[in-house]
Length: 385
Image 1 (cartoon, rainbow, N blue to C red):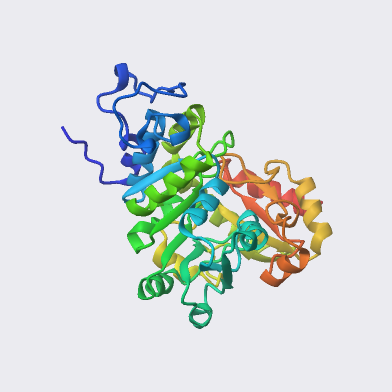
Image 2: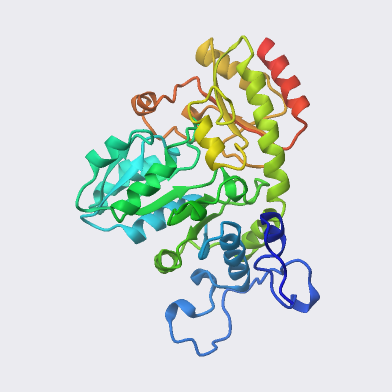
């Protein structure tokens, strides 16, 4: 009998699970085998082998991830950066050009600015709010456009609806990093994006104990990326697959709580006299708030802010706060706090950061699932220090 998988909360638990259950095991077993018996496969990419990303652990994850975003296909990778770099290397070659949003995760920015020139690929940065800039920078050899659902670390929401129209009008591949939103808050395939990328290290796994990535979207593009991935070797090992599979099942309950908690904390900080500004799409004062309302089912668990007294005050609050841990990364059950200038965006020059509005005093907070009241109380004492 077919299971009813209409809602994402149910898909998280049941989509992609083996039927019948393997030896009756309710949890997906770990297939700790590098290779599998030959079964007459005709294609190299169909041979069962960990590096070819098609073991039972991989297949279950691929089916589940595709179902979560109502997409045609999905693959997992060894890291979020592996998902990003493999996708771009699979779709772009020497002589190609593409457009990328200005404010991006530091690792993505570094890959474009420091590696693309040696590969013969050119690019231009675009303002996610300025449609005219997209047309001006479009070339005859432009192949794709790359954006983030909610930008890291300024929490901007680009004009995603117009961007999709732009890519379809000019026959461009649309790629979006959906890490900050997660499939609970936004499902890119439903809006017409060709590909959605994730650092599964963050919300999809949610427990800060693995590094992984994912590519979700059109089947023909995912297959092309998979073949490139097989050659590059950035495969996810079976135990990490198991942990990601387990972590995904609690995604809805985690994200819904983090959505609510982050918005309450953002409102608290926005009204605090020591705070200069707060970036969170759930705030009515945020320039992207109306877009976020139209596009998203929730505003996410991320926010960033600046203190009136600058870098010294930022360092002081990170030192004085007790619940959020001072560490890079995000999306786990524990709250994490950091200055992007020293972690996620430290590979960029100070001039590059400043041009994008990423000041040295900017503090980024990933809200976990601790009691909201406890985090606010902790901020109270830290801001007095």
